[in-house]
Amino acid sequence: MPAALVRPVFALCALTSCALPLAAQHWQMQYLYDEAKSDLAIVDLQFPSPSRGVAVGSVIERKSRKSVALVTSDGGTHWQTVPLKDNPISLFFLNDSIGWMVTDKGLWKTAESGKSWTKLPRLPFPVLRVYFADENNGWAAGAAGTALETHDGAQRWKPLAATLQLGDPNVTYRWIAFANPQAGLILGSDELAQDAPLPDWLDPRDALNRSEWRQPTMTLQTLDAGKTWQFNSVYTLGQNTRSRFAPPARGIGLVEHAQSSRYPSEVWGLSWPTGANELVYRDENFFVSDVWVTPRGAYYLAGLALTSKLRDVVPQKVRVLASSNLKEWKALDVDYRAVANRVILAGAGDDLWMAADNGMILKLVR
Image 1: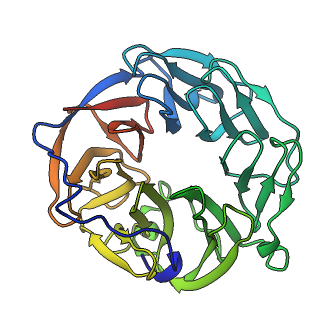
Image 2: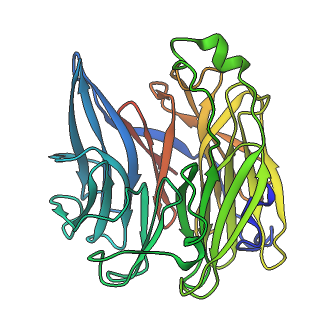
Image 3: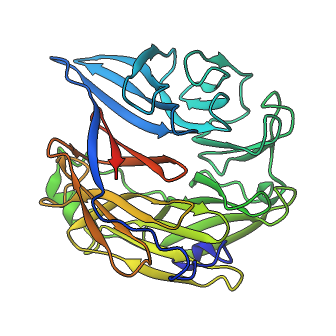
């Protein structure tokens, strides 16, 4: 992936040793929010085990907003709605009981698979995402160059040493991933100040004519379980928004581009220890918003089959591709009702789910 993910993280598996049959797989609707005069905007989905899953988002009705979690304990057959006190941003689960939720006002923890939440002490800076190696040791990432660590279960946080001299109001760290207990990375970008355009829906012509320019992409990497982090910056087109890994040595990453770009997204295979990365997929008519790799070596790309380049404005048909070798991609059948502006993947083992940002949750059926 544009060298921003320098020296990451894992070798592509041998094509003959990790192949997984993909025949007859399809995506089946499990949950559909269908209430009159309101919408459910799902912002994240996690399945820490094949039976337990949590989705978070907001029910929007005219000018009112109610934050909710959807919780399942039977693999998505039934979902329970749990009210939330803050607007959710992202989730992280350590196991099928213990998890954390980042909100617009702080950090919450659950010990009951999302059925109840306890607010934790205030963080020194707002964050967008957390990752925990165990109940005590974790990391947080956010805007204004925020990259933090905790070693007492989120009671106290301190900046990573690698960022102490690098604070920049334009830098935003959005993603944290570990491929194994030792090797991890934090992804971000330097979102240089520009004249704020009108929202895309108010000025679609401007959105399609807005040029994408090279901007610094930031990577923090650790090879010693988070004890030390190395900072790297390189100018690239697009934003590195996802890196997914499965043991022992499989990695895949996602770069998203502006709506005006020829290619809306690019998917990269990640290698280790050489630091090389390889472009494995891009398509002018397919916007990939999430990627996944299962422990058995099946790769999935989920996003939108574009009939309009205004993907942030116009909901479009959900599309999913699968591969066992990162070379040949098979289109999977998706429930005809699945349309969205963005989709999110979540998995446990070889089981996989997908949430659309307009209130749908689907499961991969084999």
